[in-house]
Image (cartoon, rainbow, N blue to C red; front, side, top):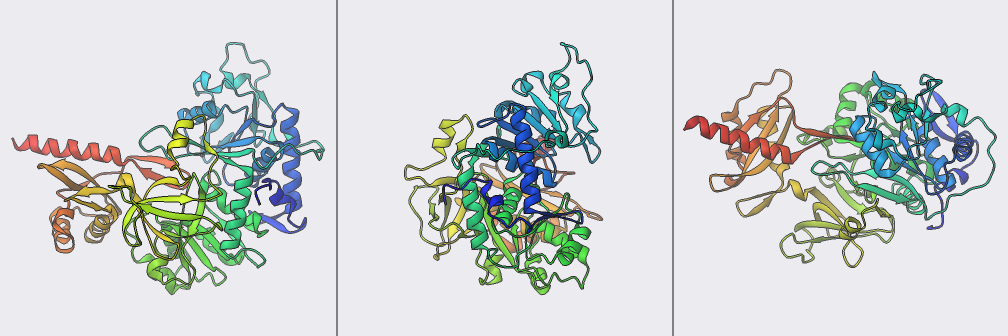
Length: 538
């Protein structure tokens, strides 16, 4: 329903039903709703209203959702900030979103966010009028001088004090209002700011809840990925739309998460493939989460080829999913009854009724039949409102007939679904062919025993050639000749890397669901290392 607001997800639920479980406590819908209303009233009293933006810089705690729903209630939106951000990143997003208030954790896991904010470029805080720490560990000096850093001169009120009044019942939010601003990963350029509206978010949450059999059942979800990203945010909103209890995990600790899956009778969990791999290790050989109906996964870590069979032996149904910040996560999921060979792949069938997918040739732009790879394009009512302050980029993201250009390589399955292969920017063009680097990476990992591998293509010897980088794990010995021999035995000749370089770590950009490798820097490194070797031979 397009006329629903985000707050309607709370209003529709039974007051005494459990909305959240957090650190051994149960929080009902009424408790969450009242907390959100009080925060909304406090924000309103401090001048935050419809059209304003509130920076939200908290880990996975119940008040993250309380603030998000409070902002939706008054027609404000939240700028979602990753706890890993440094001063430059946080300041940049606060400036670009024109945040009027910042709700934040003063200190967390050894990081002093108060001190960090005091180092942000002053011009980045020009629109910020209110600082709202989660606890009273942060206090404002009684007399901040006129020349003090802008952070020290802000009005400041603790979140509990902000929420201390009796809320009124007036709502200011509408279904067409923006409610959350997400950032793209930004591995090669300035991250885009992606704006979503209340109506589409509420509708998408309902579509996911219905499509993944959460409605009208005894569904119980666990969230161990950050709320600040599209993946975690979508899971949380879908759980609330389903009126299903959500166990909120502040930080993913495999042993504790494995325990909670059993103790809370979790039926649905979503995360990356390496998270499940760690859960299986932590749980031990006899660990079987019998209530778990599905583990919706994103394949962020290459090389875990044995994981799907390993999980299936424990009774865990892995279902590949697909989404992106522009459509929110869980746009699609592989069918529950599909064979494992399909369920282990990213992609799936769209969960929104009426959503459509197609694949276009990278060379000709023509629509492709099932089985042929090209750029994935999506049509869905649950798409973003656009990129903040970037009409040109928003227009360029869509085709003339309204499909979103994803920048992802995929192929159709012939049943309305698709298989996601890779980012187009990561595809290697070698030997006159498009090659998915994952195909090479899996062979290198199996042959080398390395902890991680990335493959890029660079010009060498007159043509584009693959170069592999590996990060060695515990006890790793770099044996490049043996790895290259294994590649020659298993891969077409043009796919065999010309070198396998060992590095201490890959260049990465932090994202809510982990770190994303900066492929452009790896290509630069490959060219430099090859050039250095050529120079040494001369």
